[in-house]
Amino acid sequence: MDIGSVDRSATGDLGWLHRVSPAAKLIAFALVVASVVTTWNMFVALALLILMLAAAISARLDLRLAVPLAAYPALFALVFALASAPDPLTGTLIVLKAVAAGLAAVTIVLSTPYPHIFAPIQRIVPGVVGDALLMTYRSTFLLLDKFSNLLRAVRLRSGLRGVHPVRMARATTQALGSLLLYSLDLAQRDYDVMRLRGYSGRLRARLPRTRNHLIDASLISVAVLALVTSAVWRIQWRTLNPYSWLVPLPALALALVAVASTVRTASGKARP
Amino acid sequence: MSHIHIPDGVLPLMLWLPGWIIALVLVTLAGRLAERSQVRRKVPLLAVVSALMLVAMSSEIVPLAYHVNLTVIAGVLLGPVLSVIAAFIVEVVLAMLGHGGVTVLGLNTLMISAEMVLGWALFRLLVHVLSRKRVRWAAFVATVLTLATTTTLLVGLVALAGGGAATARETGALSPATMTFANPLSGGVFRTGLFSGGEGDAGGAAGTSPSGAGALSVRRFAAVVYTLGPLGWLLEALITAWVLGYIGRVRPGLLWDGGFEQHEVHLQGDEGVR
Image (cartoon, rainbow over all chains, first blue to last red; front, side, top):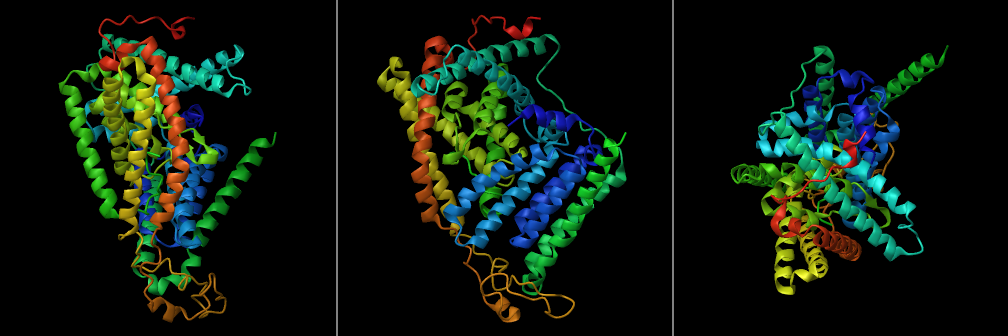
C-alpha cells in the first residue's frame, strides 16, 4: 500500500469530488454503506459498485490506486464467501458488497485530506484518542519511509538472501525491531517539540466550509436515491425482483458518461 | 486471524450494533483512564505502535490470505488500557481504506483489543513462570495461544451470525427463483431465466419462502480457518518472538516498564541532519 500516493491524491484538486465539502462526502458515504447493508439483491449491489466506479472515474481518481485498494477487501471476502456461503449467488453477493463498500471508502479517502476525515471522529472520542488518531497517520509515513531505507541497508549488507531463509527472517525482524525503537525515539522527540510549541493536550482538525452547495446537494441526493432503491427492493422484493436487472442500467449509463468525459478531457489536454 | 474480514451487510444488526456500542464505551473509558493517569505522554508511543500494526495489517501474504497483525507486540508495549485505543485507531484507518467493513468496526475493535490484552496478560504470565531470560519462548507461546483463542472467538461470532437473522433472509431477494430478466413494459418478452429455476413462474416462485436459503456454513468456515490459520499463527509467533527478543535485549525497559522510561536518553536521528 502506497500511503504517500493516497495522501497526494487526497490533497490534490483533481476533480469535482475534491470540491465537495468533507461533511457532504461523509454523509454520502454513510448512505452508500447503509445501501450496501440494506440490500440483499445481487443486481442492486452491482449497481452500487458501478455507481462508485462512475464516481471514481468522473472525479479523475487514479484507478491504478483505487481499484487495488478496493480489491484488497475483495480477496478476504472471497475467502469468507468460499468458506461459508451456501451457494455461488450468496458468495457473489458477499464479494460485491465488500467491493462496493470498499470502493466507496477508497473514493472518499482518495479525495479528502485525512484531517477532514478524522475531524468528526475527533468530536465524539476522548482527546487522547483523537490526537493519537492524527499522529498515527503521520507516524505511518515515517515508519514506511524508514522501513524501506532499513531494508535497503540490510540488503546491501547481504542480510537478505533467498538462499538463507532463516537468516533473512532474522535480519528482517531485527530491522523491524530497530525500526520500532527508532520510531519510538522519533515520536518522543516530536512530542517534546509539540509541548514546547504549546501543545496542551488537544489537536483540533476543522472541517472546511462548503464551496458549492449545489454539488454537495447533488451528491447527497444520489446517495439517498441509492439507499431508497436498496430499501424498496428489500421491502417490495416479491414485485420487484424480476426487474432487478434494470437497476444497474442507470449506473452503467452514468459510468459510460464519466468514461467518455474523462477520455474527452484527456484527449483535449493531449492536443497542442 | 484476529479481525473480521466480513463485508458490510453480512452480519446482522443485532450483532454489529452492540459491537459498536460496547467498543465506543470501552474506548471512551480507556481514553478517560489514559487522561487521568498521566499517560498522555505516551500518545506518541500509541501512535507509533498503531502505525506499526497498520503497516503490518496492510501487507497481505496472498497464498494464505493472511496478514501479520503484530497485536501481541503492540499489547506488550502498550499495556491493556492503551491497547483498546490502539485497536480502535487501527480499525478506523483500515475501514477508511476499505479493509474491513464500517459496520463491523466495533466488533473488530473488540476482537483486536481482546487479542492485545490477552497477549499482554499471557506474555507477562509466561515470563513470570519461565523467567525474563526466556522472552522469545514466552512471546512465541503467548502469540500462538492468543491467536488460537481469538480465532475461536471469530468462529463463534460467525456461528452466531450464521444461525441468526443475518442469513435467514425474510426478503427472499437471494432466491434464484425470483431473479429473472422480466420486462416491465411488454409483460415478459425478454424474460429468460438467469439461474436454475428462474424460468419458472415468477409469481409462483415469489410466493415460496426462501428463508434459510442463505445460511452461512459455519462448519466449512471453521474448517478453512483452522486449516490456514495455524500457518499464520506460527509465522506471527516467530516474528513476535524475534522482535520482542530483540527489544528485550536492546531496550528491556520497554517490555517491563511499558512505554517510555523517565531517564531515557534520546539520540538524534538522521531526520534532523541536513
